[in-house]
Image (cartoon, rainbow, N blue to C red):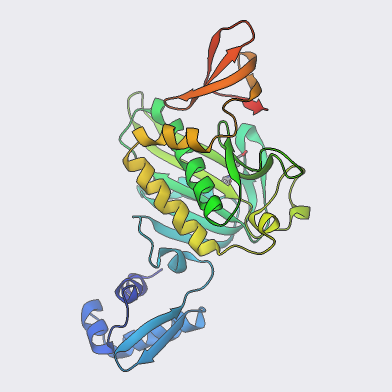
Length: 310
Ligand code: BTN
């Protein structure tokens, strides 16, 4: 998005603004304002020109400018209709020194999942990667994954979906019944840093949004499938970014928020960890994201990584 387009849309966020005032605020001619308005209209925006000036009447359902319009979080949104992997693109931006960018795509053709798996990314999804530079040691990184899972779960609940989190970072729909435990979202966090400080962190969030379940892997579901109608991906993404931003500003709140939305706590779990299998009851989560499992012999095991089944 050009700086002028961004400035124009920011100016229009709070209601009508007269053409001459817009030209003044943007430091461009009135003809240039008009040209921008025309190109936004061509891109699907409703912009009315009435007595008191230009007013936004309709925002496209998805896209970078649409997500940024009215967004109450300090992310620049870089949007792609189709991309290999938003995490890969975020890595490029990291190497250019960028931060607080949300790379968002409608479709991914080479999406990456955890444990070297792929991630199916048909059109209609919300595939996003948040590029962050938190001033924390690398050991704290997992808490940002938890924050993303909470943010997705809250946004899903706001559109009427009974979502909850399976440790460490899957968002599921329903905990029991016919639709029990179907995967709605997966998160892949990647990081570069030194011993004591993170250089960058990329939180990659794959949400099956307006996608038919038939094109998804077995055991997966989508927002559209669960609601019986598509979701407004612009609003969903805004809620997600805003909640994530609130949580990262107050890392102490993240664990409590995670516990509140967890499907895993209180369940009998089997966790496949790099050091072997841990079986027992999941009783808690500890900073920065370790699962505490009470095993059958009464020991409390602290699990920091692995695949969890319950
Ligand atoms: C998982 O295995 O559950 C994690 C899947 C993460 C997928 C997302 S989609 C957006 C971002 N870009 C990628 O290539 N992967 C993540």
